[in-house]
Each structure stands twice: as structure tokens, then as C-alpha cells.
Image (spheres, rainbow, N blue to C red):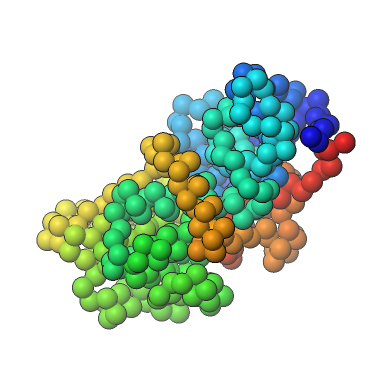
Length: 351
């Protein structure tokens, strides 16, 4: 069994005050290294996941009563380095978890809140938050069925890439929106039937011409004008799943007003259509089973997992906690493909 050199202090990226301007309010702080108690493990983080909602969290939108400073980050892949009594995992076990405060070099977790992994790979990171959001939402809320037409917005992103593939695995016809020709090719490689580069094609016109009867399910993450277009494109019995509204996250309100809201009942009723919200934390019992389904599909070559570590950015790859703010800002440039990941690299903690 490998031995680990555990530092006396660990670093955490915390938000000092409420704001959507992530870089302006976060700071790296050192705190004493926590010791695992009964049923707990200390995890050395290796890969950190970046999400659009990172700025919602620093803005206090998930918990208006939050008292700053607050720990940031939602998810990580890492390695158990210390296990408390009855923790079920041994040092060296690769694991993944979703918990507030993941933007840190080490994380103390309840062992029953982490998911074991076959190896320490960045490609597993998209599954627990982005992938679970896609798979659980499409299955439990969208109730997708073979043969249905599924529209995925922001399809080349961290959650969009899994949504496209999950719908294809279910036997659906998939339309995916994106913002560049590179992303069109990326979506084709994932099996997307009809990628739409909305900077070159008008999505509303494409849907009216090629899908005159509408789409059965919409996996919607953008909001604003995109939401309006999707509502108007629903088929009879169509279901639109509200995953997010990223177009408005950087604004003071956190969302862009929709022109269709005032007439929404009149738009839904004639089609027996519905708009359904989805928030991953309401489906905790499904996290583990759905992660394992994705890991299994990945190992069998049925599911691709693409990560973007910022190699194409001017500042170079995202390595280290100091690069988290760069990674968050990169997400909002619309240039990323797949899941944005910060690599903490191997700091040679093993003796």
C-alpha cells in the first residue's frame, strides 16, 4: 500500500462576497488539513469540474441566506489518501464526488457520498454533475422514448454532449444547437442527427421546415430567445425540460426575460404540452446508479466523454487552483467543447 505525505494545511478557493464576477470575489485561503472521522475519507483532488452555475453560486442564488466567505466548486475526481474507521475505501482508491467546496486541493467527504472509479481519469468527471443532469432529466422528467425527436440546446457543452448521446442510446432522433463549425463536426462525431450552428442557420426556420410537426422533448439550458423558439417548436404532448438559462447568468437578475411567458398557457394547452423544471439535488438517490450506468457505457465504447482543459486558450492549459477563474471565464466565451476541467496535476504526494 502506498504511503502519502499529507500537508498540514490545504488550500480552498472561497468567495469573499456575493457577485457573478467570479475572479473579483474569490481568493485562495489555507486552512488546517481536516482529519477523517468515522465513515469519512480525505480525498486529494486531481480534476475539478467547471460549470456555468459556478457564478450563480458565488452570487448567492442557490442560498440567499449564505454567509460569506463560502467555499466554491461543485465536483471533482480524486484519490483517497486517508480513510477513517468504517470508511469502506482504502488509500489509493480513485473516486468522484459532488459537493460544495470542490475547488480545493483536498476534500473531506463522507465515504457514502463518493463514487468509486476504475481509474484516476478526467474523462470520468463529466458523469457526476453534467452527465447525471442529462441522463436523469431525460429519463425521469423528459420521459424520452425510442423514435422521439429530442432537441438539445448548447449541445457541445459539458452536459449537452451527454444529453445528445443519452438520447441516441434511447433510440431518439437528436437535433443539437451549437455556435461554430468545429462544434457541428463534434456533434456529428457524437451521433447527433441534425447539428444546427445558430450563427449560420436560423434555428426557428430549420425547425419549421424540417420538423413541421414539432419536437417531442427539448433539453433546454440557454433561456431567453432560445427558450422562446423551443416553446414554439414543441409537438403535441411535447415536454420542455428547463435545465438552466445560461444566457442570463451574468446579469443582475440571473435570467433574461422570455417574450412567451405571458402567453405560455395559450401556447401549451392546444398541444397538451408542458414545461418541466429539473434540479439535480432533488434526485440524489439516482446519482450513484446513473454514474455507474455512464461509466459502464464509457467502458464499453457506447458513450464518449470529451474534456476541455483549456489547451487552446491564450493562457495555456488550466493547471492548478490559480487557473480556476480562467476556466470559469472561458466557459462564457462559448469557445469550449465538452466539459471544462482544471487539472491539479500530481504534486508527488506519494513518498
